[in-house]
Image 1 (spheres, rainbow, N blue to C red):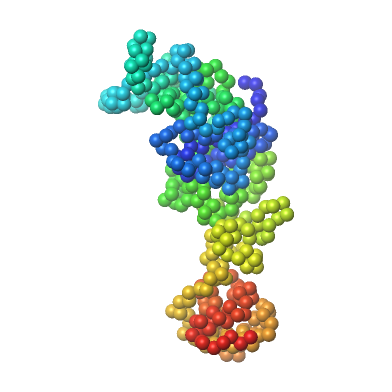
Image 2: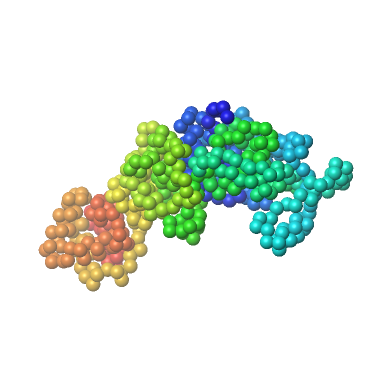
Length: 487
């Protein structure tokens, strides 16, 4: 096959939320196209009308963009191979089905679902390993077919699988794969509703859209011989195939499951993972550069990515703890403020994540106290919520000496002329020593009274940001004091 311009694709099906594994596969296709200055195409495979979910297409497109990945051709972008929705390409599939009918490579099947079910049950009773269509309708003569078509008898169009043929194809990851045609069923190409099956539409679209490399999960390997037969029936050159490992839970032998946590790509963003951190994590799920390097930008990944370094294994472990660690690394190394090139800093991302609930100027002040402590954006609210909302204080968790501790804190803080960390440190520590309080016990009561929690950023740095008025108001509210704040 002559070398062609590299063109890869991803073809989401709007039957639900976009899976994180699909983002990984999309990332590999996208990076491979970019590495060779090729094109990445997105098309929507919406021919499964029974499982179609309204609104899913828009959500899929939005989540792909949320991860910073864009397509060169496809919905919202256009391109020379429009339309990019399979439901808008039905005439194309019908035309190509007719080509195969004329060649004798496909045939009409008028069998009812009841007959097919009975056939399958009889085959199972004979302990047939894999049930197959018995080709009853292949025996119909031309006049019978024409009469049934004229009488509008419902039908499907099936592919006629060649007899006694070895179907061989090369996989760029796994190597040569060979399957006897006797293992392949006469698959349906056009369903009774006029819509194509996945196997038929994917081959036609990949050919017409000039896809050079088909990179997908290795659970599609059993389907590839069917696709090879269609390429051969049409007399078309095949693309290169590369089947990559699917994702599994750590310590399990099965694919990702919601029982262990998020699986939809959007869920990870909703949990406060940074898209660039998730992408960096996904890069290593099936590929390894052969070095110790773990932190990759998209540009670096494009430069180093190669199919030769994809793992030859069925499943790779989705280590959620490793993802959490990687996300924390990205948070720690992120710029707080927006960059001149327009890239959103951590402040903007947190502000957006919480829907503008918090004040952006305050976020910028407190992030230096939290940046090394939070592993996800979601944790920001747990540690910093007290800056924005008056906390609920459970007096049951305060020490027996809490009233004396808080009364002394009010007295010291009211007397301060300057509200800086060194002034607060010196005033409180001196008073603790003078009163012979236990330092740890005092500051825990102080922390809880101001924040409502035992776990917060450094308390004295925090109260500098909160301000003298707010801190004294909170302390007096816990004490039940009605006196005015003196300053």
